Length: 635
Image 1 (cartoon, rainbow, N blue to C red):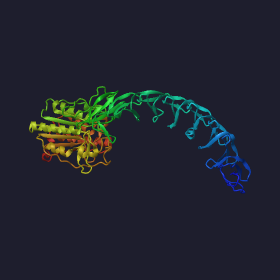
Image 2 (image 1 turned 30 degrees about the vertical axis):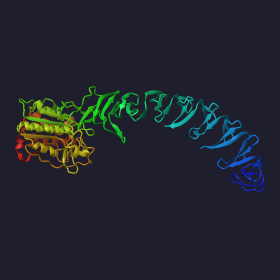
Image 3 (image 1 turned 30 degrees about the horizontal axis):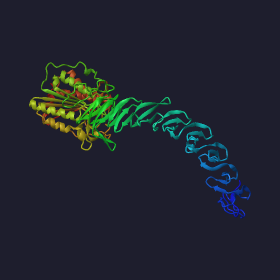
Image 4 (image 1 turned 180 degrees about the vertical axis):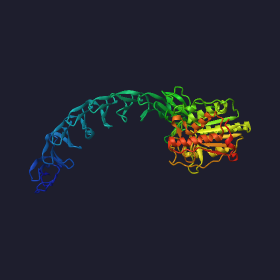
């Protein structure tokens, strides 16, 4: 390998790879002019480029040297080994591009046209172009070239023309493993082509947003309106019309904006909600949660009313303070403190409300949708019918099944069938039976308030039967027991639950002939399926025993930290099934003592056989009733 040195007339200096000093007889390295001639010699003093040029320079970064002939303005180029790559007379200047795989030399011809060569002098692109751009070479292996009409084309790293001279601008993208090019025509409109020049989107838009490529491309038309193009069989078609200021493709839907208003489409371009809401959110497939009248602060909607949209129509009006997504085709809505459940309107053409516990809208039995099979066991058939009515006894039945995250299997069956036994077997008039399906906190309060009104009106001559099927829950700090309303929160049970101690106290203060309470629930924090509620700490808790007062008897499905189980093949809670069974086989003519003995015996046995778990029903009478309670009857 030769070592290259540049010399001038008077003294010596070594330049280049491993330059060595030779006998001094030259001056001024790297040509400065002033009539002095320059050339290159190797380390042995042998001339590589004769000392006859007005300019010579060694470029350390390039590891190349250049020398110029001022008479015709041409420049030569040699490499670090002393090989002349381009002699004098062909090109005007050079620029070396340091690329990831090699060095490429950009040459400017004597006529000002540019080209490209390898560092060994092999021509890739002849000097026939006005300009070239190497910005995308490392990533795409292509070179942009500009012709005399200021139009750009693309050639490969071998000099092959890939894209003809049809556009004024290129922006290359490597998006989700797709190499695409945004191009602009001379009218200023943009489109997209493939890296091989295939037109994917013609140049007819002011702007394009490729952040959801390859499935979607946001486009702005000549009027400044925004729409969305969808890739259909590698061809982009208008999916969402050009009528918006912005679009945003989410995981499950597409949000559109028109200034401050929002709307929603499906991922296939089907309209869900018109662009006329302050906020839109996903409810379930093809259904949007929408807000009217609210405003956004810190990415949270403040105020306004919520509803649901389907097919561009407000199918459930914006009248609610809070709403939820649909789970198992049921959503929770809240208005004026009252929580209701609504069906998926796409699954139920009537769009009926599932539950309404407001005082002004008493529910009819069966308006709540159960996700479990309807009652069809032996106790649900051949229900005995009483010969006379019991007009001074009133039943208050709470059947809570559809908790948002932890439903109680067959709770609605339990409440509905107990209501039928109250009417048919115990002889209560239908108007005396108050059934609260999926009762909210406000619904339970309503039931208790109605009990008070009846007790006051009947002045001690009325009897009350209270039945509850649903979740019970403990306060982990105080070990107090609570009924869990359908809108209650187990993690905040002291605020959103209904205290059992408070209920007993209120019931004992009413002027009643008798009060019998049936609780098909446990208060350990467990579900019927023997799992812990999600908000529980995962350990069953034994709550304090609450002592009834007055003329009250309380039947509970389980003791202490046990679980109140279900009886799957019967479609009921275990406790309720045997309660109904005894009423059936005695025609309701049974004392509380006999009823207790039968239910306790059967539940304890069947729980071990069916569930491999202990479940021990308990009965707690008020202190003053002593043993007299055993002789009381429900009719």
